[in-house]
Length: 184
Image (cartoon, rainbow, N blue to C red; front, side):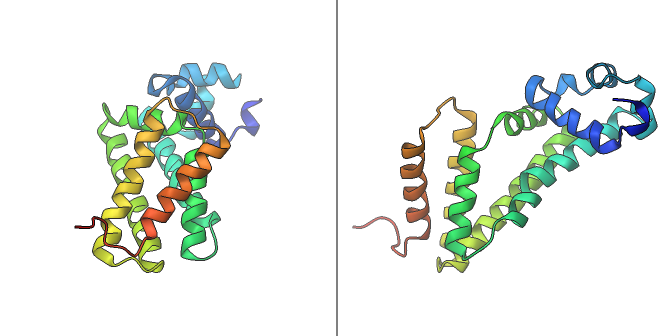
């Protein structure tokens, strides 16, 4: 790829791929420019420094991990919840794990992960409320659903399609259940 056709978005997308594959140590101008087959000068044409690039990578992750997902899911609250769960539990988890790992050592990444987590929780809670779950219960259940997702992405468990469908059906059923939970 020649320098004149490479955009800042190309650099950021290359950064996301490198992050998912290798981790945050791969987010350096030298290694990325070699991977893209361009000079380091191209990197600095688009970004003032590595920190500016890291910020752009995190902003793009936020778009991919939250904004695009919400924008692409349509229908009733229940169907959006089903689509969200299906998408979350069948997605490639490498990038999500890499960003979360990066966040353990980098305050800027941690702030972005916390912001995305907060937005995701609010969105799930909103879906549950729209599905008829009382607000206080919806808040608790949104956390349970989200923690199930986080546990899944951090585990090495992989489910076949039938097992995943049963899991997601049960999660969705429990999340929108009108019962109060425990029985005496």
